[in-house]
Image 1 (cartoon, protein in one colour):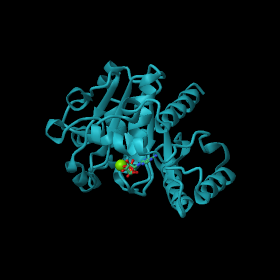
Image 2: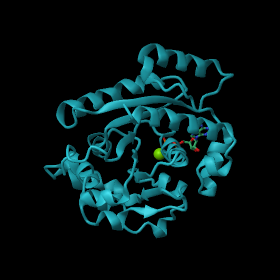
Image 3: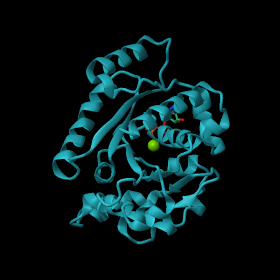
Image 4: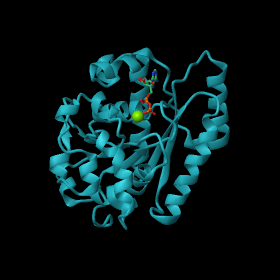
Length: 266
Ligand code: ADP
Ligand code: MG
């Protein structure tokens, strides 16, 4: 269970923002696919009872079998939970609506904040040789999201380019600070990525400016444009990189992956 003995383990990144609809799942799926295109082995952990990441990667509800819920509660083995996808070097720990009761079931557990942490550090996970594990968080700062932050090395925050975006961010940062103080002192901010960015829209540009003024280097250079190909791709159960490789959305996620890979070495 110790990290120290496994310095070359996967980098675990929680994709989090308590607001729904800001691009968490889209970012988890497409960043994962872009990391794979760069030769990485990637696991997506679907930690949202809505299971959108699972659907988006082509895992039908009927074929979800054991899920992240079983992984967290220790009811199934890593090899039973983690599934291959249609995409080489991309795996998923799928989620179903079951996960919505996990919060309640975890509360009475002494190790409630560490359940995902411990699950992802079982030695069986070494068999997969992952480079990255991306955790797609639910739209809340619930115990599930806290579990993701305790398990992770860093938090990647999709920020929708709209009014009030930055206000929600301070709440998220407070939770990150709490987790740092209580359970995971090494937790860092991987970065904030602006999503659904519209170059022609003043508000988008204003949000970007505010984010860069306030957060400086924490904001990724790459911004993800609002792009219809990104929103169409999940209905074909494809990452945008496979759906339309030369689309603006695809190119943006590839650029984001380069930034994430460059940070891993440091
Ligand atoms: P979250 O996981 O934060 O709830 P999603 O990733 O599910 O958010 O995105 C919410 C909706 O916005 C989805 O319908 C998705 O297809 C769409 N969407 C996300 N990012 C983009 C984008 N860059 N351009 C266009 N649509 C997007
Ligand atoms: Mg989502």
